[in-house]
Image (cartoon, rainbow, N blue to C red):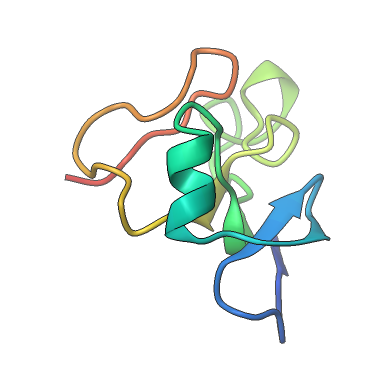
Length: 92
């Protein structure tokens, strides 16, 4: 992990550009915006450790903004969950 964000934020805090937007996510907002890419409460920004694989150049995890972040409880796990533009990967 290279950086972390969200310390002290309330559960459901919406992060935009790695900053608290002032918005709190709840089930109503998730239903109103079903295609939104939610980044909630905490971000762990990863940094690679293997030159040429995930460190340096075009493969650098940190430069590519590879995060582990919170999502709404209602979001499915085990399947791609966002648009190709954002590229979120969910756990299985």
